[in-house]
Image (cartoon, rainbow, N blue to C red; front, side, top):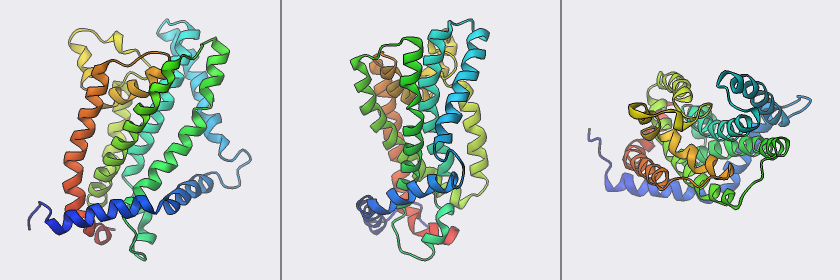
Length: 269
């Protein structure tokens, strides 16, 4: 059996992506229903997302500002922005392990494009991100942080993050559907990545050979592209090049994998 996709596989994969994007009503409604179902019949509903994030940022921010000996008015805005962006990245990666198995009912009964369910995952995490980002203006107001026009640079960074997230979700989704131990490995890997990424500590604290933890960390590149402009900083050109490089690498490994094994996903469910 050849591992490289045939011309028919490539055509079917392109058609799947095209049809999946065009059926935006399906993945948009599925994403909204996922959030509604998660908080169904609770008193605060979807606002638990915002409340949970606010409690975490407030509690951990005060504790770690003392541990790192950082001024609270500097550290909490830094932590709030970074952790909210990280939650979006983590949510996309963690959910990707079950993106197709979670859609077993749909995929075994309807000939829907597989990419529909990856878009559903992206929408679900974007809604949670929209709830969380409400906290940032409140934190800025409390600690006297004045937003600057650089905040607009967060938009192209977010678009690039979502493109990379889509590719990573397809790649993880296909492999995790075939190998059911992989989701647990990814979850453990993301816990380690959390501590290796400059979310609670600052990247300039890593000097010398330890700087490789930031320079070679794909999550750090995307975190800078979205988080730094919100904090009023212009990301370095290196961060853009690194993020583009990681996105290109994801495309190179994901495209042939999806084209070759897209038709087998239903049989692996």
